[in-house]
Image (cartoon, rainbow, N blue to C red):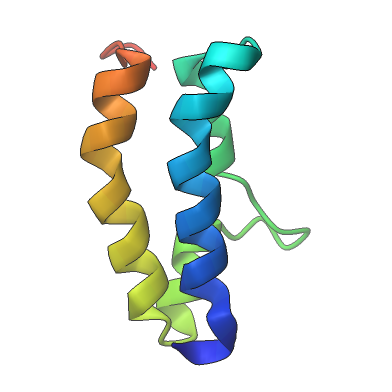
Length: 77
């Protein structure tokens, strides 16, 4: 795995459901995290794709079902 980026992303995404039990994390907070942007206004997903870090993108996409089930996303978000 390139520079361990996907490992770090996986640990963070797997920790979110556990953290939600301890602190108030909403579906909106998760969307903000997944759509965070650089100073150049590029999203993390775009930068990962641009740099060929498909393992990071796969890690995020694989985590989405668990995040959706845990945080009960609303279509309005």
